[in-house]
Length: 227
Image (cartoon, rainbow, N blue to C red; front, top):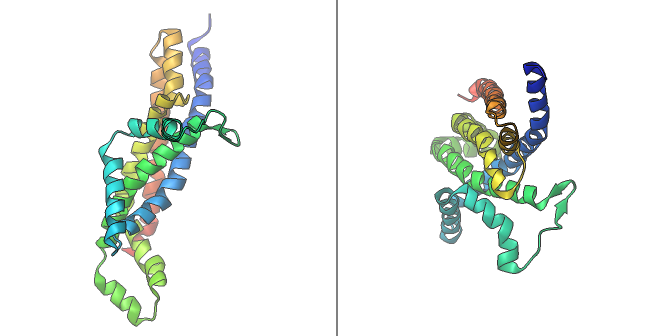
């Protein structure tokens, strides 16, 4: 009979494959959703009313419908709407289930990040733009060298909250049969008739969020330069 420690190591080993998918969804979503969110925020504040209203509608849809539903639409949409089979679609080692998961998460979180960025940008006083213009800065220089660093400093706490939520939301990938960590834990718990796999998975989620909180706090302290 295996010792409790040996059994625990076995559970951790079996959850590791799911952890890789969880981390993949997390990192790819951040890579795509943060810059997309910034672009969406700019579109939301565009002077062109058509562009602004279209972006507002996109944000409304992303924030007003369940992420699980959005994942299903991204995965099944190409086939049911356009008749395109995605069964053999692959990008390197990633199949379309994983690709659709990242697309769905990125589109959803970009909408939330966009509103956070928009609030930060609009909180900046017009005096800073005018001062930059007097000093000879172009609009691009003003935005990237003066405004954006201060915006990042102001929105970091809100962004941190969304990033922590993202870690937990990765479990929703199970709707597309992506075997991320929570799904692996559920399968293992069912096979062993035990809650230990859930406890171990919960510990992993907690540690990941703890690391994120530490990293973001350090970034926030470094950004105090712009206070």
